[in-house]
Amino acid sequence: IPRPRNAFMIFRSEYHQAKITTDVERDHRHISRIVGHLWNTMSDEDKAPYRLAAEKEKAEHQRKYPGYRFCP
Image (cartoon, helix red, strand yellow):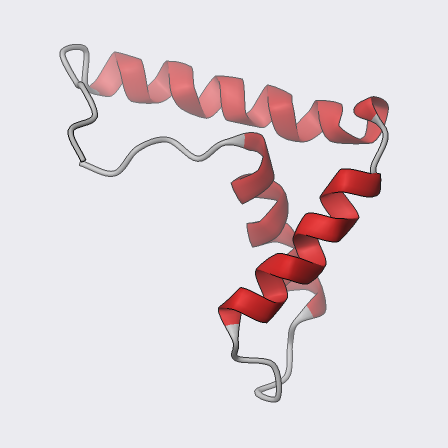
């Protein structure tokens, strides 16, 4: 069972789909560094929609898997 995504992972996914359209950039570590820098420079107001989406995803995950506990 996959864990629900956090706000940053939702932002990263959206950014990747919107901005990285070519086959040139395939190094996900590099993409994560770029997106991480963007995330850290964003205001709390800009991050709010992603945090809200993460909360909704977490609530849906808890509804689907009520006894779920992450075990690495």
